[in-house]
Each structure stands twice: as C-alpha cells, then as structure tokens.
Image (cartoon, rainbow, N blue to C red; front, side):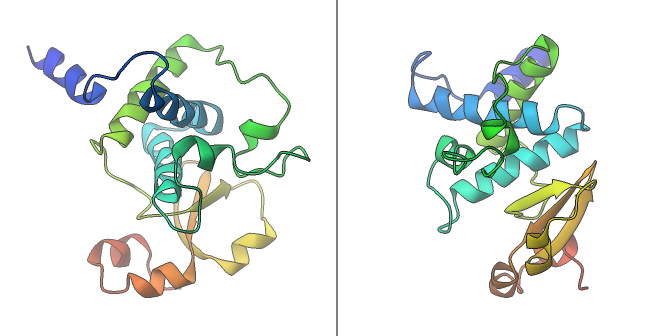
Length: 171
C-alpha cells in the first residue's frame, strides 16, 4: 500500500495524453536532468531540474520549461543554455534505467514534491570549468560536480529570506 501511494505522489495528477503540453514540459525537464546530471547523485539531479524550474518562473527567462531548455543555440553549437540541447548529438536517452529515474525526478520537481537544494539558483556549471560569466553572479552551493549561482540583484531582493541566507552564505 505504501509503495503505491509513493508512486502516485511522485507521478502527480494524471496527464491529458502522450501529446499534452504537460507531458512535453515534463519530457523537456527529464531530458535536461538525464543529459546534464545523469552521473550525479539525486541531489545533483534535483538541483539541475530546479534551475530549469526557477528560470521558467523568473521574469528574465522564457515562461515555459521547454522554452527555457531550448533557449539559444539556433545558429552556433554550444551557444545555448543547456549543452545537451545544442551539442549536435542525439537527444534520445539510451540508458533506460537512468531515463526512467530522470522522468520520476522531473515529476517530483514539477509537482513540488522535492526540495530545491540550490536555494533558487538560475545558473550552474561543472566544477571542471571556470566560465567568465560566473564572476558576475553570486556563487551558491556546490552539489555533486556542479556549482550553482544566483544574480546579485535576486540576492538583494531576497535578503530577508532565511532559506536563502542559509543556502548562500556571505562571501
């Protein structure tokens, strides 16, 4: 009985069908988790998924999961927000177990059944690179092999939030 309840909770409300907008949004989120964080612990997968969701609800980014994920890269490879989207490689998941897990996590994130471990981050990068844009942002937690960021402006607006104060200690 408990396993059935847990599965139902992770799945969220029923969707309208295989071509519904909700299913497309969930697929974009799951693909991003799969391709950007497949080798990370669950907290790292959730963190990457929450960056997408945080952007989709932020006025500075497109208003939709797929629009956020597919932003940029129309003209040049690797000039998009999420590398998997414009790297020229196949966007078909080949690891069935990891793909199923990514879909479960995407539903948990979408239906807000998981905690955002980034504290509201809008950007991240692998710890193996040092992008120039990182210097203009407020560094947050390192989760797995990714470092997460918020803008200084967003941090100033949220100064009264105890959640952000705990997630992003002063420099």
